[in-house]
Image (cartoon, rainbow, N blue to C red; front, side, top):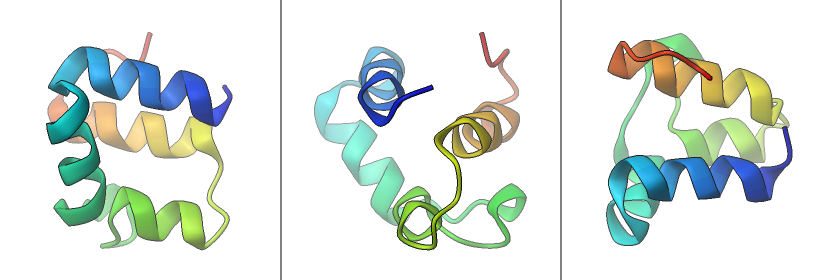
Length: 62
């Protein structure tokens, strides 16, 4: 998965504004108590971050 696909999916689920807010503010235990933005900054793979978001929301990753 590419980063552009990640953001497209995030915006589909949350809307453009809330997707960015979620990524900056929501700390996910499945990302080691990091936010999406922190995980990306630390080099986490896009696919793993997407799976963590889906696990947090209890929704399918596909």
